[in-house]
Length: 193
Length: 300
Image (cartoon, rainbow over the protein chains, first blue to last red):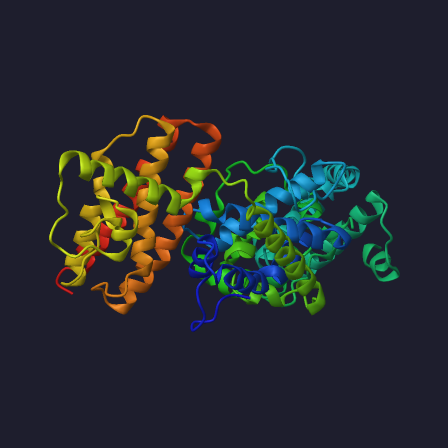
């Protein structure tokens, strides 16, 4: 959700909150309601479990509140999500998980990234080895498909009929799935033969 | 979940692939997709940046997703999948409502309210705990004001100085500050927007007329500037258009908060050169703003 044209901008609300005037908490409340859904989705995309995401989101907002007086007016949303990313990285790095709201330390950006946390490395490695072992004529069309080329483009490039491209891609996919140990459906089996 | 690449859409419609990628960009498991695409394509021979890849399509992608990207650029994104991670951060920070609608799962409203309530309660608690009796005297703007007033009265008595005939502002009367916005003629009383900004800029730059060398002297100087911000906030007859006044007062609130932070830092560190340098920067920043408005309103 973003600010509608007739609503106060993020930056004007942030400035009001930063000034700690009488309406500071109201302005901050508007910002929280505007971005908490997106913030929770972002934390989820960073592999923060739902059970911890609410605490982490509260921690992000509280840190924003604390730092607002020293905030140099800029793109507020970018700043908010940078803080969220740092705290998610910190969350994955520390064994104690989410820090309490009070007395929190500045999170560091060291340690595994959120992307690294949820990756099945063993599988990725197996996939790489299986892919390398594939015969060229299958691997080349499969790679082109995985690079976003249309079947028509691939057929033109490989100088083969469209049906051949389709068949090679299906066979490559099925062979790879088998090689990495994934289940292959009956339809895929018949494609391969 | 592994095997994400095996869900790669068949060549059925031009939008199938960008929509599939959009979904992966904003949902968990992007790291796995990146790892699997890297396993297939290897490291790119020529790396590109997200900015150059999006180029002129940046705004459209942020607004409506990857379908706005030419197929060739989409291919580069798949061959250099680490860029998808950068794209994810970008769309959360700057993307439009389209990106919120991709994952159809509804967020329970009470979840949001719980987060808001927890933060609001903590902030209120913090504010309460800060209103204690432990605040040192020179963090009290009025206290510094009274101290300054006393010093000025003493000066008047000793050297026989007479105040100017102009009627001083209420704040100036209360604080006795002789420079900047808190002084008797620190705030403009009439004229155009351009003249008002010029007046305010000149008064602000009086900050540099003195270079305090001790923590107490610097605390007093900062506090006097801070009182000028208060004077500006309370001024009822600033000769500025409503739009300019609203913007200036919003900024003024921010500057006040920054002066408060500087005072607290000075109290804790007693590091006069460092805090004075930051105060100089803050004054330069606000003077620059006033100067820019002075120029912008000229001839308006």
